[in-house]
Image 1 (cartoon, helix red, strand yellow):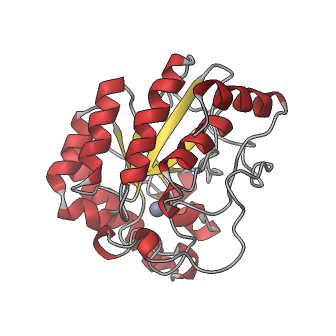
Image 2: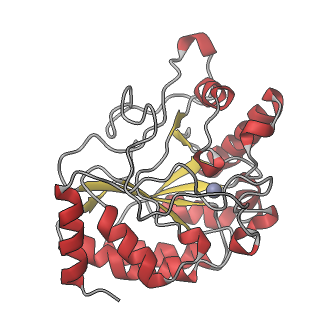
Amino acid sequence: MLSRHQIMSRRLLLSVAGVTLLSATACGAPSTSKGDAGAGGAGGPGAAPSPGPVPPATTPSGPPAGTRAGSPPAVNVPSPALSSPAAERRISNPLYSLASHDKLVALTLDDGPDPTHTPAVLAILRKHGVRATFFLVGENAAEHPALVREIAQEGHHLANHTWTHPDLRNLPDAQVRDELERTSEVLQKATGKPLTWFRAPGGDFSSVTLRTCSELGMRPMGWSVDPRDWARPGTSKITTRVLEAIRPGSIVLNHDGGGDRSQTIAALQTYLPMLIDDGYQFTAPR
Ligand SMILES: [Zn+2]
């Protein structure tokens, strides 16, 4: 494993070179019908990712088309109401990074809640005073309502990651809406607050998905740093990938559900204090 100095030096070099790590896939297994959550959140790496080329996380690349243009401000944006006529809402592009030149970043955790791994993640975040955004799978949330409330009570943001974690691109429009709407209803029941953010499984935002997201009063969020933790490449790799890729404004993708996330948890325990020591602050965009 690289020393902290080596990691920071390598990260600095990458920052100087003006590159960032981006992956057009991820959020768990590339969009299979089950994705990385699977039924009851039991999928994950056990549900092997579909074959085909997937860019490694260590390959610097440019941001996906439309990454930053038109992105809403990262913070202090009022949350919209749950539902309103489509005509009243502008369909926005996904937010892939925060508009920050300071060492302000966002940590996002997908595919939970999970009765084993989510409490462990919450304990780490509590220890380091980090606020995160949890993109919850609706059927998992319905199964573990106390865990959903606990996430919210700890000051984290609840966000919508569909009901069953399907590839939304393969679904009829009405089913896309059902996936989003059911999840919003369950999460809002837990907190009494409207949701702000939605993330499509795999980050695969279709035009129908974006329109539906807007109609339900949410905005889409992607990510800019993906250590591909869902594939369980080893704690050291997850840690190194995050530390090398992160830069001011990054949105980091990790997973607390959808399979065995012990590597992710160990990586969080390692990289969070290192980043904080390096001057990074974490925010949950509103
Ligand atoms: Zn996911």
